[in-house]
Image 1 (cartoon, rainbow, N blue to C red):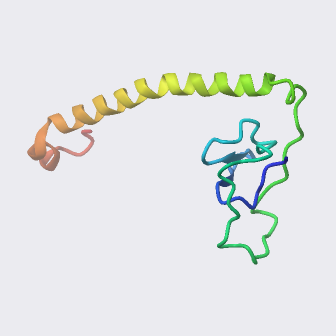
Image 2: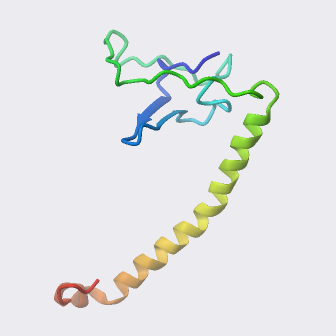
Amino acid sequence: MPMRTECKHFESRSYPSGDTVRKCNLDLAPNAPWRCPDECPKYERRLADAAWTHGSLVVSSTPPEPEGLDDGSVEALLDAAEDILNDVAESVMQELAEERERSERGGRFRRIFRRRGDS
């Protein structure tokens, strides 16, 4: 089944570069952006815009399906990419926490009375 753009969990976002992200916010569409599961247990029709007419900027057309979508190779590739991002996320969060700690280490008075150009 193609992506259900009318589902309340579907999201599409376009960027100035022309790239568009089409996804299920619940991560239940393993073949996104091309397909939703046939019998998705969390499918809910979006109610807020059920009678609205959308312009052409709301949802871009679905990209063509790649070869190998049915044999699971695309799903495996997307899972591997997700694993890479999940592995990196913890170290990035740790770096951000360390940076925040360094900036707060100076104390309130240092932040209040720091000279221009100091960070």
